[in-house]
View (cartoon, rainbow, N blue to C red):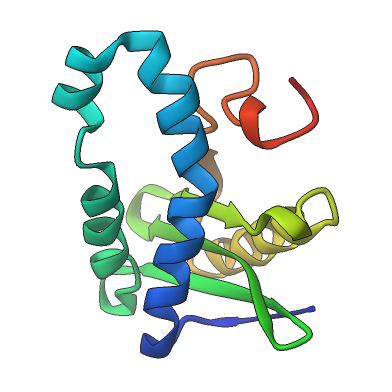
Length: 144
């Protein structure tokens, strides 16, 4: 596996990966939990929300970066992260791993790569969110 910096040709594949990763949670987990009315008001256009997020996620001039994991020439995951050096603060904005590559260390490798880069840019603390459940990714992993 290699981890490399995002390039514009990655955009469509990362959007597909994002939708495949988070769609089941949103449609099969969150929508039934909150109901259609609330879901539509809060996350109704979630695909477009992710498209917008990805459009501005890699902006090195603003200390915002995306790294891509590849194995056998295929994209198997990515992480988006940002740093506020003046505050010593970093944040993993998004982490997505292809279903066939989960539980194989891809997510951990992406996070470790991002953590190292954030430390180099002055982060002393990093935030990463996983949702509001005991395991926010329960529909996506073997933990829940």
